[in-house]
Image (cartoon, rainbow, N blue to C red):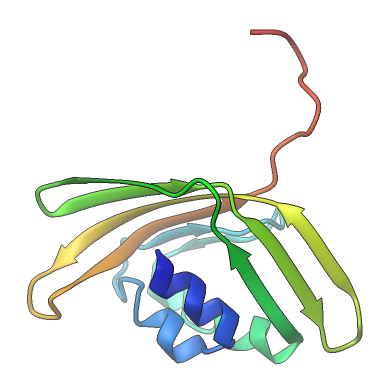
Length: 128
């Protein structure tokens, strides 16, 4: 996860994409309603496109939790997300990130097969 966050900080789409599975079973959700991507073919140009519009993008990890079971791992975090566009807009918000990873033996690294970034509701709809 930290290499993913560093690639965002560096606005390095190539380094970021190296962390994702380049297969048809990749699933990814972004924060915009229409940002659902099924497979690498749909997802592959996303980071290049996004980074062209940005001046900076920072994830500040605050609650990273990672679990591993064999060749599968999953992670969750609630980082602070700070984004500044080239047009001068700034967004600073708490986000939730979840990811599922699969070990890629030939590449000797973990690759994201499922990625989800969302903004949770700040107010409860009901008590627990």
